[in-house]
Length: 305
Image (cartoon, rainbow, N blue to C red):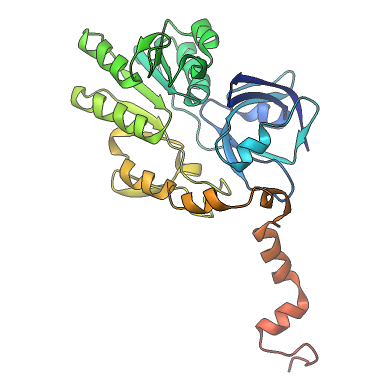
């Protein structure tokens, strides 16, 4: 079990968790993630590590209530615990001194962008952050971003705070103003990352995105997180999650992310607590001697020749 040390809402549907996980904190690097399970029979979900403290032995996660598991997780408070937390997983962000780097976070994607922004700044780059939300209350981590970035531009779709418009419009404004931008990192909804890629491509600005496909085991075995990049197939959990935005097949990614949409909408919430883990059932079946005999075509009372 992994004890929750702190839990607080950053926005109505976005919650910050500080979780006791010493071994993960010791190994974690920017861009990596964990896979958690809230309950023993719950589904596995990937969450990017927003921050960590090696000395105190904790990691932080920022969770938006979207599906059944994230909604369940966001009901927990300090003193509660989650069943599993496995990581760090994925390749760390590739960090180097390149000049001016624009880090773009869309919604809860800002939480994923934050640790990379910290690492990019430590590498002595000039860091500009564009952090967006539909409304003011959904713009998160502005204070934290201002503490480590050279420039921070909050944006809102409805104009309730900061720049009135999309993160891509603010990025275009910086480019059109003649700013020398040497790299862009964009993290957020897939349509947003695709739009950022379309803005930077004509200008030849190297652009990295952190992909969020459907993921189950985080080790490349399930194949659920397949992504098409540069005409080749990769597994986001072990080959990513960060890839060259100009090479990503975003249309295929969005199609695959909608594969279980109807199932997710109609599935009974109570199944999160009651439905047994299919992998565990399959392993138990393989280890059951009587079921093994049946697979070999023998009746329970027959002996092998």
